[in-house]
Length: 368
Image (cartoon, rainbow, N blue to C red):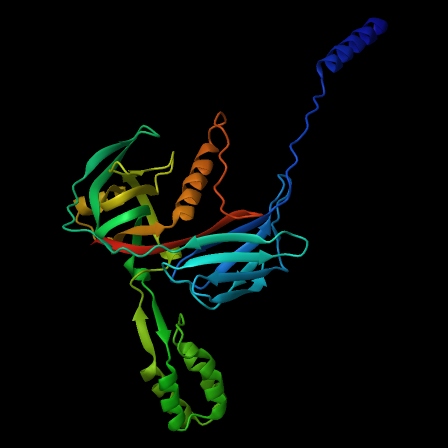
């Protein structure tokens, strides 16, 4: 009996092992490339990130540290970017609209990396007589219904080469921020009134630039021991500080609502419901559908949410639009195992990535 059991076990093991077959396949070898990411606009200083492509098994970015990064304007300006760590290179200058910029990156033992881009002119956009008339829209990509109201964005003039990205935004006004500035002329006024040299030396490093808080300007007085003198200059600084309420909030403070195309030159990219992208010629307006189920409920119940609703209108160059289209398509296709892979657009010579300019504005819709 034990002999028969042993034979049976041997046959089972032999059968199982015969079902296991090793398959050999050769993974496509791809050459490591330098990745450039630089989306620039007139409101922010130059900032560029350099890294290297990663393999699937790698989880940490490999940043490029020893690169010479220079941007040349068509007017002959040479902008050198300084390394700040974690692949970030910056400059304390801002790009200008309608000026062609050429990027050149030199890395030891690597071909020179180049790219070219421009920030298109800002064409003022607006909406007239907003009528919140709710309708039902079925998104053809999902076959789902959304409550939306139509909006028409009007441009101040026809846009010959219209390349736009639209996003519906919501901003809680309770989070509205201010920024502060202390001017060099105000500092000279304090100096004439006897501001101590040490305090002057600390404060001069902060003049003529915006800060997130105003107390940074009075920290220079901490070395003054005489309380009367301290509060005298403290009040002087407070009186001279310029405060500006931010009309356009920082991007990280915005919440995004769903938005859909309602014009033949516009469209949503695949399953993405948070951007409408369009490209056309001699465009005077853009028809969109704005969606926010909570806003609909608030209006119906006369409940003030203390929110500001706007449309973010971004005009980019051809590189910017191509990058966004292909990027959003690649992200959307990841959920479909039967779809062909989408390669994200790159305009980098001897590398990969994106170097593109854009102009952004916020078009106010309503407050509620």
